[in-house]
Image 1 (tube, rainbow, N blue to C red):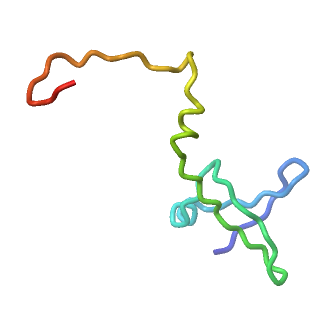
Image 2 (cartoon, one colour):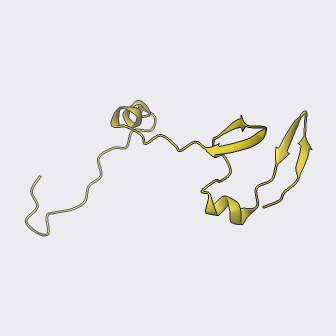
Image 3 (cartoon, rainbow, N blue to C red):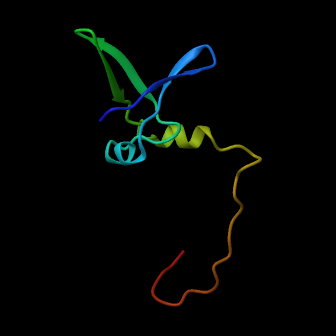
Length: 80
């Protein structure tokens, strides 16, 4: 697929057509690795890290902590 490199501030930018981005799972904000192999530019998607429980819990603060939610009386065999 052919596209054009354009100036963006003091850098260069490469537009990725939407069909190609969708096929390769690249979206706005995706992190990619740029490398050079035998004189060719190679762009590799950096897969997002699967969050661990510790990573998720590290984001919990007093300001964003959800309070208990009342769901009503039992309607089946569930017990609390």
